Image 1 (cartoon, rainbow, N blue to C red):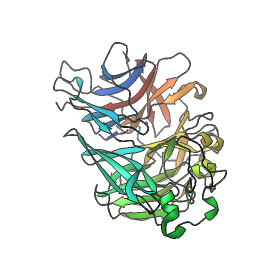
Image 2 (image 1 turned 30 degrees about the vertical axis):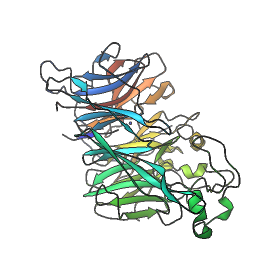
Image 3 (image 1 turned 60 degrees about the vertical axis):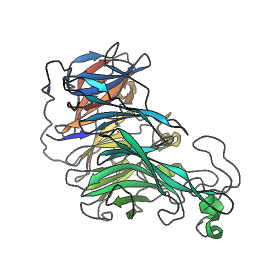
Image 4 (image 1 turned 90 degrees about the horizontal axis):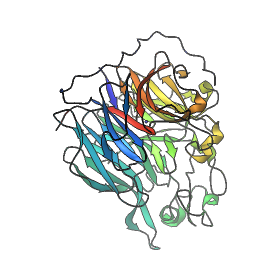
Amino acid sequence: MKRIFMTLAAPAMAVCAIFTSCEDNHSPELPATGSGNYVITATVDNVNTVLQAAAIGSGEISARNAGVEADGGTQWVYYKDRYLYNLQYNDGNAGGTTSFAMNASGQVEARPKSYNITRFTTYGIVGEHIITVSAVDTDTKDASGNQAKGLGFNYLDVEAENNRTAVIPGENFLGNGEFVTFSGFVEANDRIYTSVVSMGMSKYGVSYDGGSRVRYPELVSTYAGGQGSGSFDIGVIPVTQFPDSAWVAIYKDDTFTKPVIARTDKIGFAAGRMKSQYYQTIWSDDDGNIYVFSPGYGRNHTGDFKKTGTLPSGVMRINAGEEKFDGTYYCNIEDLSGGFALYKCWHITDDWFLLQMYTGGTDAQDAIGGIGGGTNAIAVFKGSTKEFRYVTEGLPAQDNITSFGNAPYAEDGCIYVPVVTNDGAQPAIYKIDPATAKATKGLVVTSDSISSVGRLVPVM
């Protein structure tokens, strides 16, 4: 039985194939005092709660005065079937991170240690660690005091319950003069893969060697662009000069040194976006092939000091054991979806993937995250055949869907997705069968919202 633990128009013509439907959800064995191996995080009356259930394919539980209370967090991450982490992000500050585990009696408990982690823009599981990363200022400065950018890492050791940090150089990382950040991590083929997002040029990068790294001088800003995550300073290039390229760094170990860089100019950078957060859109199939999905955000880089891209939302592939993109493989998602781009995606099983789609056309991406345009549609995609189908049967009406959980759970060939609606119905977990593109309503959770679902076994 395969289990995957993750952080969450008319159908297009499908390629015909015969697949085995996913198995029915079952109730796992537990000690008699346990409440169930399935773990759901929900919010009710502004209280975050960690709940347990014996099954997620049916039934009903309540988050009111139930479960283990948790502090507000930015992202729930299930580390395999052992631990649940509540990553806390505070813009520019440290955040308190806690974790949960199941004891020998089958009850989920908060683990004793908590610790602070620095600001992060992406996260993922690598070996015995949950790793978070963001672009940071380093101690390296030029004669004018401009600081070089780097990549700041938090390594959360899940067994030891501690955290260490590291910084690696981020300037001119791709040889194009720009600094970078990462988006997501994939372990496959005895390698670590991460999407590299080129971020534009810092003051340090623009000034380096008299400006020798600047390809487009007209894009160097001459006035400040305001405050917030979209702000920029005089003397920088605020977004990438290469919006129609995607890069994947391939590493031998978690020291993140001496990468092999794979590049393609058939898609833009591979990452979902919501303000400063970058969501993983590269995944391995069961055979180790790496599928690289791009929402095509470069088309929304407009205005002064910005280079606008042209490429639509699409998919490329790095074949198992290879260190470059497969030049014979490309799929235009918008050709299949009726003109809509993807927002996020997750691996389900085999080479099936779940795609969360924008529903307001490409203009919806202007707000980064679909504000005003919506991201309330999901589809299934099979990498080898490029089959794409919207999931509509069995789900609530699209206009009634307000959100999907950001950490779904895959098991037995299906994926379980939290769904919140605006029609007065309680949030519920829906089972999606990729072979049929059909949804089945499962566990109902009396709450205001559900953010994640996963599974734990006793470890304490």
